[in-house]
Amino acid sequence: MILLEGRGLTRRFGGLVAVDHVDIRVHQGEVLGLFGPNGAGKTTLFNLLAGAIPPSEGQVYLEGREVTRLPAYRRAQLGVARTFQIVQPFRSLTALENVLVALAKDSYRQLLPLGRLATPERQAKALALLDQVGIADFAHRNVSQVPLGVLKRLEVARALALEPKVLLLDEPLAGLTFKEAEEVLEVVNALRGRVAVVLVEHHVHLALPVCDRALVLDRGTVIAQGGPDAVRSDPRVIQVYLGEEDATA
Image (cartoon, rainbow, N blue to C red; front, side, top):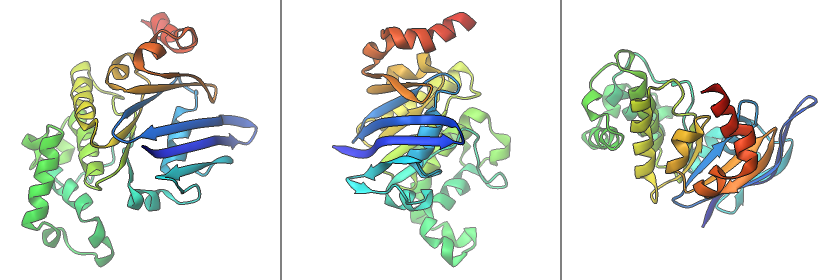
């Protein structure tokens, strides 16, 4: 079943075509990797799917419903959650309180204090989400005092609090050590079959093994797509992406 789909997505910034007539389909429960070298257009395509920017051409569909002109917050309400490459927690709060805020999304308009949002049911659910991403031990730590790898997983927990159908992860491995990256990828792998995940990442050699399918961009166009083995061995990918990493190793 196709949950999220982009048809002919194009985005221009002045004379620059950042994304050029790209088709993308995200199926229920799969992990789809979106890869490409710097400047390939993957972040722009990600933002088109999330609703952060509108397309110059093309359409976006969620469960068959066109959502092209819906802003990001409306898409989130319909089941599309996202994380950010630069983590944006509430730094004066604990990890648990950060998830509680996300769980209390329906109470925002009432402007209730945090203490009134922390019902026993919400606290239990927040702890379960922290446990799901492997950071329950940090529940009562102020987020300004925890490592970046923990903050990246906290971003995932906060997004999961929205009960999404599709989870968009924006370069979740950026800035992490190898061990921290492995811990994030374990979380992604565990989500397979439960939530559709779109993983935008520059570190293809780390992220590709957890993907069911991958789509590789270069200069705004799709140059390869398919399973991990097919993408890894594609001559165009080797030339523009894997070859780039070999050259800088």
